[in-house]
Length: 237
Ligand SMILES: CC(C)(COP(=O)(O)OP(=O)(O)OC[C@H]1O[C@@H](n2cnc3c(N)ncnc32)[C@H](O)[C@@H]1OP(=O)(O)O)[C@@H](O)C(=O)NCCC(=O)NCCS
Image (cartoon, rainbow, N blue to C red):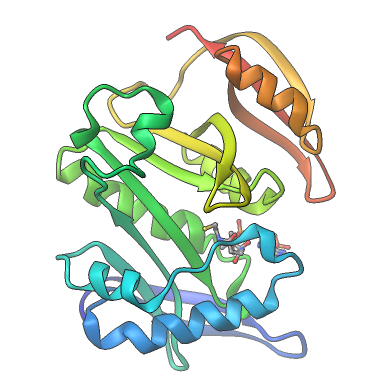
């Protein structure tokens, strides 16, 4: 591990005890591989529904960790508690720019995986790590950021929409998992205006699939985990 990006305090809640603990946000290197795998395993075991998250294999992480400043993580007294990363897919077949009809695939970056220790939920870590990665992506002059989120993953959909991502497509990814492809163009104004807006029950996937096929984007979310509504519209600017 190296280069502290920022430090601060997080609330840690193990269910019986709440405390404030110091964290450092760092760029992660190859020596963090086992910590990454262990944290991913722990988080996967905590999920009520395995469909929500697509774990990666050690080889994927090994390849990412040798790339300069693409994986960042948060560390507390108990070790690595969160990480996220971006990947430049270039001309590879899985470049999500292909799904979205983006012309210049070399300007596309994927925000991949956000893994968080369950005791540290509720600290906006997904937004903190994603914002830091987005700043690094902008510094490197990429323009289109894509990520995948399960349409059932309320927390992640909510966080990515609040970071300015919109749902552009819904399709099967990773062989058998239904995913929203979310997209943010960093050159576009953050305050887009929308027309033909319709609110759709988050559970109604069929209507959402139809809307994105007709050029609508999911741009706002209201409600709670069990009962949420996504606003779809056509971008006017
Ligand atoms: C996505 C995720 C990292 C977001 O966590 P986060 O950054 O802590 O989210 P927030 O700080 O916005 O949390 C807001 C509230 O939702 C709660 N919350 C967040 N994720 C939750 C979850 N998976 N289950 C239950 N409650 C959750 C938080 O405790 C917090 O509650 P509070 O306001 O009462 O304190 C987290 O939900 C998670 O680990 N999900 C599984 C992995 C995943 O989906 N990764 C992203 C796709 S690759």
